[in-house]
Every structure is written in structure tokens, then in C-alpha cells.
Length: 178
Figure 1 (cartoon, rainbow, N blue to C red):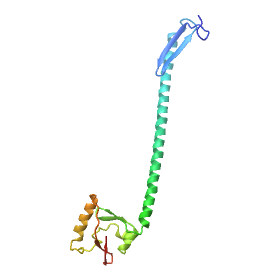
Figure 2: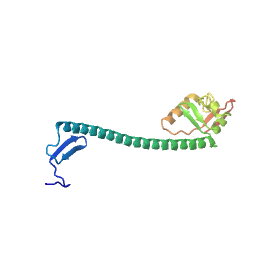
Figure 3: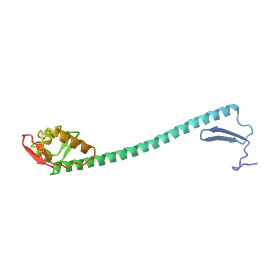
């Protein structure tokens, strides 16, 4: 009886491999020798290895696409951060109001307007403690270092501070500020 392709199939060999079955047929009865079967088994092994490597390549390509997407997103975030820093730096430096950033009790950064209050440049006051820029005592008689430390520590603890303060310029003259 002829099969679906018009050929009578009398011998069939199915050799499983990792991605399916290697099927070989013949119209001759007992067409496959033990040597043919060994060749087909080796071929199935080669196919399994080829498909494993293909799977590895596809997995690596997907990972590469993920990494490229992560890098693109990171670069976009970094650019946005740099743009924001440039914007904030411009606002900071161009502000007419004096702005100072402290690290603990030391001046970490300030704009020219704040340094100008002390008759200085930002470089000259960066690193100074707020006590170096104050007279030893405030007008109410409290020690500047003790009162200043309490106010800075309270601010660092999240408590807003509003107070009058006497500062000392680099030339020794004083001025009052809020």
C-alpha cells in the first residue's frame, strides 16, 4: 500500500534528539544496518549540540538586547541628571540671594552672593566652619559655636530654623542676617 507520498514505506527509524526526532524511512524492508543506526545516532547527537548552541546564541542575543536597553535607559537617566545639575548649578550660581550648603558645620559650597556678604570669594570661605565666620558671641550673649551647633544639628534633624545671626566678614567687621 502506497503511503501519503505515493511510496510504500517498509522501514522506519526514529532517533530521538534534544529538539524532536530524526525520522528516516525507506521503501525497502530492513533497509537500515546497525552501522546506519550508529551514523543516525551520531547525527542526532550533532543536531542536539547544534540546537543547544543555537539556543545559547538566541539567549545571548536576547540578553544583549536587554543590556542595550538598560544602557540606553541609564544613559538617558545620566543625561537628565547632568542637565538637572547644570540647571540647578546655574540657578545656584546666578541667584542674587546668598546660598550656602553645609556639610556638618563646614561650608561645602556657596554662591558668589553668599561669599560676597563676607567680603570673600566662594573659594575663600569653602571649608570654613560657620563659627570661623561668626564673632565668638552672639548679641544675646550666647557662644556662637554652641548656639550655631544646636541650630545646625536641629536643622539636620529635620527641624526648620529661622533666627537672627551675627556674622563676621574676613576683614573682621560684622553684619546681622536672618
